[in-house]
Image 1 (tube, rainbow, N blue to C red):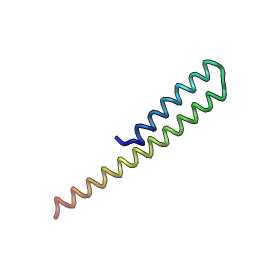
Image 2: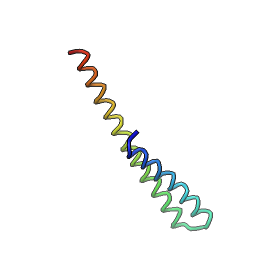
Image 3: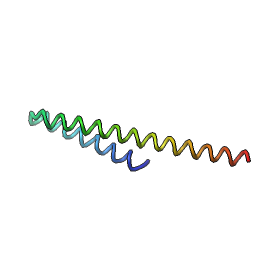
Image 4: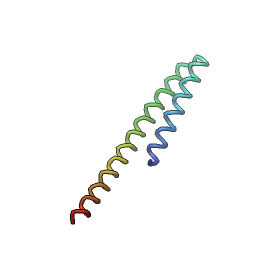
Amino acid sequence: MNKDQVKGQAKNIAGIVQEATGKLVDSKSQEIKGVKLQVEGQVQKGYGDAKEYAKDARQAVKHAVKSHA
């Protein structure tokens, strides 16, 4: 797990809380900010997931090359 995955998930959770709070106090602007934060978090987590996948693939290629050399 990398920092983008962790930070993205944290933003997503914070956005869920902010959206729910906005609904509770009937504040559309807070709801929208919460949804925006969720989207940002999901994008950042997706970026982190892609980085992790690329790292794993790179390690698999290195291992395959070493085992066939």
